[in-house]
Length: 226
Length: 273
Picture (tube, each protein chain N blue to C red):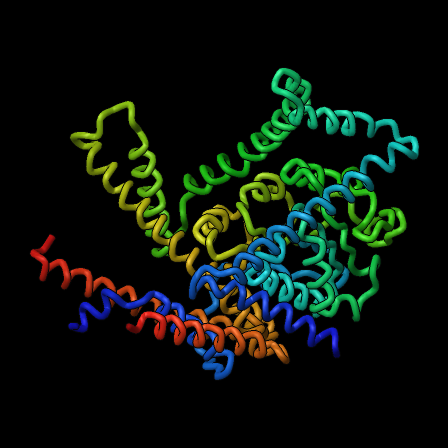
C-alpha cells in the first residue's frame, strides 16, 4: 500500500512537473525533462551492454570463436573516439554496417516498396464503383505528384497544371499527416488524464500544482500593481 | 477593448487550461460517443479471429514508455483477443525499451496468469541491429536469438521448438513508434498475415500498404484500440479516450474557426492586408 501511494505521488508529481511548461518554463519542468532523458539514456546503455555481453562476449569467453569477428569489428568502431588522423581504424566496421544495412534494405525495398505497389496500381480494381474511383484518384495523385518533382523540364504549358494538381495533392497529404500527428500527440494528455482520475492519491500532486499556479498568478498580479 | 481585440490578445494558457479541463471531463463523465469501426481494424480483428487454438503468433514491441500511451493499449487488446482464442505468443523487440512493454502487456492481458511461460508464451527480449535483425529473424529465429529475455536458452523453451522462421507464425503484429517501411521490407510477401500497430501520425502511410495487400489491417493509434475493444467486447482505455479525443478535437476545430474569423476581420479592419 505504501509503495502504491509513493508511486502515485512520484508519478503524479513528475506528470504535473512536465505539464507545468504550459504555464511557464520553471525548475520543475527542467527536472522532469532531464530525468526523462537521463533515465532513458541509462536504460539504453544498460540494455545494449547486457545484449552485447550475453550474445557476443560471454559466448566468446566460453570458446565460441565465431564471435571474435563481430567483437573485433565492434572494438574497431571505438576508433571514432581517437584523434582525426587515427579514425580510419573505424572505417572497416562502418563500411560493414552500412554495406550490409543497405543491401538488406534494398533487397526488401525492391519487392516491398516498389514491385508490390506497382503491381497493385496496375491491377484492375474490380467492379465496385468506389474502389474504381479510389484507384483513379490514386493513379492521378501518383502521376501528378511525380510530375511536380520533374525538374529537368520547365513547368510551363501542359506540364504546369499537372504539376499544380500534384502540389495540391501533396498539400492534402501533408494536411492529413499534420492532423494525424495532432491526434497522436494529444493521446499522451488523454492517457495521463485517465491515470490522474483513476489512480488513488494522484489528485494530491495535481491539486498542489494547481494551488502553486494560483499563488504564482496572485503574486505576479500583486507585484505588478503600483 | 472589443471582442475581436480580446480574442487576438487572449493568453494562450487559457487555451491550454480549456484543453486540460476537456481532457479530464469525459473520464469523470463518460459520454459513450459512437466509434465507427474502419476496415483496417476489422481486417486486423478478422485475421486473428480466423486462427485455430494453438496457432503461434508473434508480436513485436518496438517502442518505449514515451510512446506507450498510444501503442500499449493496442498490444493489450490484441493479446486479450489471442488469449480468448487460445493462441500461443512469441514476443520480441527490435527496440531497446520493448521487452519491458512486452512483459507488461503479457501481464495485463492475462497471459502470465492463465498460461504457461515457455509453453504458451515467450518473451525473446531485445535483438539489436533493427532492420538487419528483422531480416535475420524472418529467415531463422534461432540463428539470431540464443536465449529469451530472462536468459533461458531457446533449446529449453518448448514453444521455440516449433518456431523456425517468420512462416512459423500465422500472424505477426508489429508495433512501432517509428517508420513501418522496415517491417514491410522484411516481413511481407510470406504466408504470415501482417498487422501494424502504429501511432496515428503514420495513418496515411499505412493506408498505402493496406491498399497493396501487404498488410491485412492495422490499428490506428488509440482510435484503433477503441475499435478493436468494441469488436472484442473488451472495453478499456481506448473507448474512454475516444470521448476525450472527440471533445478536445471539437474544441480545437472551434478555436481554429474563431481564430480564422478574428484574423480575417482584423485584416479587413486594418486595410485588408
